[in-house]
Image (cartoon, rainbow, N blue to C red; front, side, top):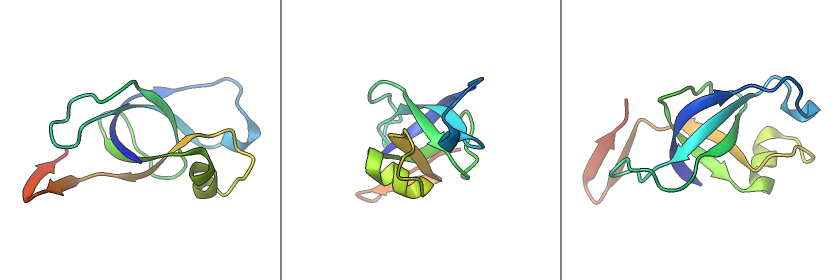
Length: 98
């Protein structure tokens, strides 16, 4: 899992049947405490969280677990949004996301 910021939406004229009705997002992994980029952006599926550009999200980044979240064992998916992050607390220090 990782925390990331949604940096864009993706549209596809044709996609796998298991992805119909689901949003495709581009998510930039970030360091939760500094909010600095922490790797390359990743294509992520959003089934029902309804995240959008600017949101800070929790991403499940493991294929089998992502397919379990989507309840589709054959979905061609590696990463899925599992929540929107409001704040992170580490060692008594809190970072709030807007």
